[in-house]
Each structure stands twice: as structure tokens, then as C-alpha cells.
Image 1 (cartoon, rainbow, N blue to C red):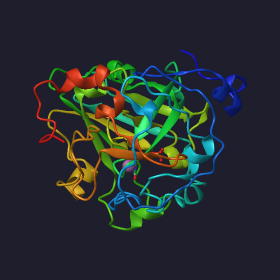
Image 2 (image 1 turned 30 degrees about the horizontal axis):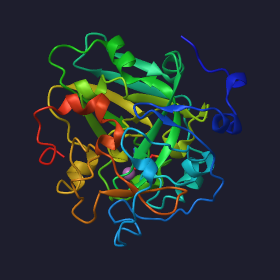
Image 3 (image 1 turned 90 degrees about the vertical axis):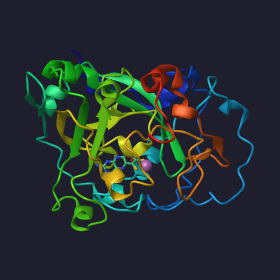
Length: 317
Ligand SMILES: Nc1nc2c(c(=O)[nH]1)N[C@H]1C(S)=C(S)[C@@H](COP(=O)(O)O)O[C@H]1N2
Ligand SMILES: [Mo]
């Protein structure tokens, strides 16, 4: 049980000089882009700017299985955020979330489990924290590469001991309209809810993140603890979690309820299944010009494709 000590925090420049492997892609962090953020501001339900533009040839490095992906900068990752509880404007979230109170924080874990428990943040930080560099692909067709700190959700679920009736996991974000101004509007049904099938939740790639770039998560990224499911569209990676419930039935999730023809429960990244209003075949990596090919399962197919054997991934999007 190791908590990352402040003295062990890796400065950004050390990250970029170390050669690191992207989990599941064998990708090497080769160099460092100093470019500014070309941050557009698309609301979740509008196609990103550039979608109508013909797709440029994907870079040679975008071949599946042999990616050379650079990390996005700390600045990019912390100033371009989807977090509708604060704002629909990606560049306004960080400022509005600045004073968000993340301590004390409790995550209630219950439902179909033998050993329900409420974990304080201090308990969550007792799980051995590791670093995972993952691609994140938003359903809006932009992406980033983020060095997370956290631990497999599986480890927490094993402690509460799901019963044999548990088939799905339901996650809930904090509901606190006084702190989260976006919750005063009915743009979505609050609190934000997400869900996974139990085997997806137990998969080694599924992370509970508590930090990035070796620092505690900032509010805009879902402090103090959020989910990261790298082979699914970003909206599955629910932020600022206060509740985790093991359930028998597939949970009703916020985006799927808001617009079922556009957002499914599974939401696995799939370049062949277009969003009704834009193609998912390519994406814009924040900080890059041009576009990259989007990869099936966001490039994590080797690890996760077996979870969906026999399923119609177009119907069960
Ligand atoms: N509670 C909550 N979680 C959320 C969202 C949100 O609006 N509310 N947005 C999602 C979307 S659409 C994306 S792309 C990612 C963005 O994570 P990031 O801002 O840390 O990059 O968070 C996801 N988690
Ligand atoms: Mo997203």
C-alpha cells in the first residue's frame, strides 16, 4: 500500500524525457510538443469544428498497434474539459471549479455486495497508486493522451465482495448545485450517472484515477476520484464520484437517457459507427493540427475485444 509522496512527484519535464509505454499500444512517448492549445469550444451535442472538412490522410504513426503518441501537456489537460456540472464551455470549467471542495470526500460502495463500505478519500489513497498513460477519445471526436495516477477499480470492488447477483456497476457524481452551477440548469438529469458491466469494471485497464502528472486531480478533471475507461468514449469516465453501486440490471445512464439514439450504454470507441450528426472515423488530437484515424476500441482491442465476443457492436453501441 503505497501513497505517492509529494517528494516523489515527477515534474512534467521528467515525464517528457522518460520513454514510456502506452498501455496496450506499445507506444513510445517520443518527444514533447510545446504548442499552445487550439482549444475549440464545442458543446457535447454539436459536431466539433472541422467535422465537415474532408478528413486528411492520417499520420503514418496512427497505424494500429504501433502508435507514437506524445503526452498532452498539463496545461491542455487541465484547461479543456467537459464537466457539465460546471459549464458547457470547456474553457470555463477550470475557473468555475476552482473552489470545489474535495475534502472531506466519501464514496459509498454498496448494493449487491457482501461487504458494503464507505471509503473516505484517505482510504482510497491507500490502494497502491500506479501510473497509466491512456488515450482519451471524446465522443465529440477530439482526443488527448493523459498520464493518470490511480488504481484498478477491480481492487476496490474485490474489497466489497460483489454477490453472484451483481451484473453491473452504477456510478454517481456528487449532486451539489451550490458548488456546481451547471446543476441549476436542466441540460442533463442530475446527478450524472454512468455504468459498466461487471466484467468491464473488473478489467485491468479500468482505473479509478486520483491524480495526473503525479499531482492530485484538479476539480476540472473530476477530483478527487473519477473513473477512466480508455476504450470507451470519454463520457463513460465519470468524474467526482460519490456512489458506486453493484446492481443486477443495466443502469440507466445520463447520456443514454438524454439522447438514446446518440449515446449508448456500451459506448465503445468504434470508427465504423457514426454519431448521427458526425463521423467517428477520425479525431483531432488536442495540440495537433490535422486529424488522426480513430482506432477500434481506441486502440485497446487486444485487451478488451474478448469482452464483446458475439455481441453486435453496432446495435449495442
Ligand atoms: N460527472 C461528469 N463526468 C464527466 C463529464 C461530465 O460532464 N460530468 N464529462 C465527460 C466527458 S464528455 C469527457 S470527454 C470527460 C472529459 O474528461 P477531462 O475533462 O478530464 O479530460 O469526462 C467525462 N466525465
Ligand atoms: Mo466527451
